[in-house]
Length: 190
Picture: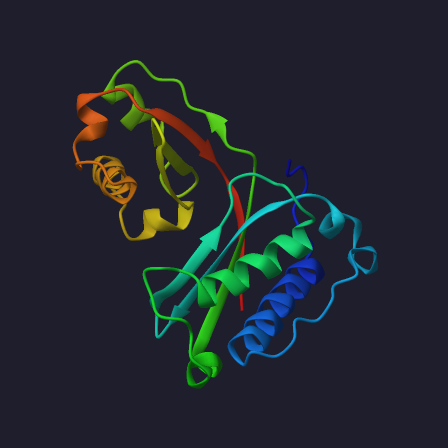
């Protein structure tokens, strides 16, 4: 669980690891081993991250996890590679795109259940620009990072888009109570 912010040096380290890992993976070069013990204590701790890739200001890949299960330094490397090669919304990043890819890393706090009774409680309780939101309905779930509020600032629209991302009709959040969790991120980019 995140208790302190990453230093600027740790942020630069993670961005460099993400960049190097993506370049090696796209070029199909051998992945360099990471000796976790060589990094700062905070990077050795279990951490959850998302890595977002953009090209000319447009989303090019974004993959991550909500649950910390490995050292943060390894988590960022894994999700950088997956965002470049395995995001099913996009073809794999091509070598010619590498110089133009912009990398953003989000380090997540542990998601906390969001308790609400009515749709008004839900709308009024969310903190646009601050909360990442997870919606869950049975086996289906979806999340938007807090940065998505920049594109979808209205809470009702935000929840509708998130329902669609989950594979449900846009108005599902208005018609039935969903399992909702929120989290925050420390976001940094190249």
